[in-house]
Length: 492
Image 1 (spheres, rainbow, N blue to C red):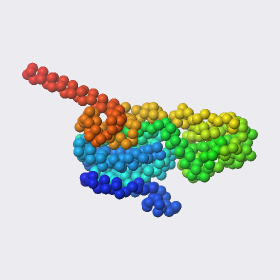
Image 2 (image 1 turned 45 degrees about the vertical axis):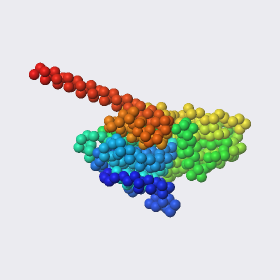
Image 3 (image 1 turned 90 degrees about the horizontal axis):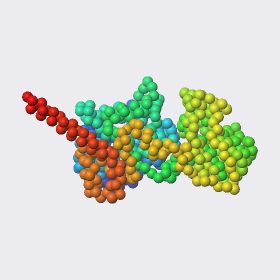
């Protein structure tokens, strides 16, 4: 795949007349026309099951976009700037014969309905059609990880004609702001892609296989800590409210989130010693378990919620406990969970595991948090050092990606609108068609602001330095070979 020419005029007209290009919501028709009985699923043209993508063009480019809650807008940004991106690639000849495959990444562990979407490699206006069929599900599991390794596995199987002929690699860009899962379960691969693996795969090995065919980059648009926390909390809020629970207007709220079909239970022991749980959902002190899920393993995105409405929570000591009532998953392995406690507007977060040895019932109990509550005193604001947020910190995410990719291939930038600019610069420098100075000059010609140019330069600084050193080493090696050859010739 990948033939044809991208018509700029057609693309620009389409963008000026279509304000709702991302109307696809997982149904065969638009969400507005869908019936409640229809099941949401990946668009058939982007379904990875039993598929192998192929590229006949000289330079395959994959743009794999995180479409979970925190990064859903990136897909819209890429769509708007795609005509410029393709136009510059061709006009500046940064890479020869480009063809692009778009991918969308969700969270397979959290039970997203669209954990992976993959488009064909295209070089013409069919790229717009691919993007219009992307389902921006905005899911995720609230763990600080998404299924990047699943996308890496899929594309490591891609047939690249030019690579098979000459060994020339393509370019692969992950765009996201979270880590990957350390292991790729074989059952995920079987369910989503269709391949039958003998065992689970180490994600590091999966990324190594991808790098045999592609120069792989992680483009990391950063955001403020406040925005990041809001995105994390939004997943818990969404689940609680969709299940009919009360999230706002509370003195105390305790929410339990996990991502499989096992039946975990949330218990809160009140100041009077009364226990609120599935067998006693409403206490005498007005606490209420208003969401109780997975009695029969009905969802892989469950939540439980216990709360006291504003003005009702009594003074005293509370204890939060998580219990595994029953396994519904085929394997009786431990379950990771998150607990969010809101106390007079203060958010506290806890991560843990339960049933490490297959325990159920009281033997599985994990005491998560014990606290004293006084309705006459307000709590301190949320602290970014809360354990729940640890996996979302820039340094934690970057350190994990450094184990999978070269440090210079991790491209951090402040403004998501510069995503495609940074991609162009990375390809130009690796390809050797432009250095940093030349590339920034081209950005000035496109009226990029001084601030934007500085952001692009920071994102590409390590890569530019590495490429420069590599060229010097190649030059010195060539010179040494020429000198050695002259010496042999003179002896003859």
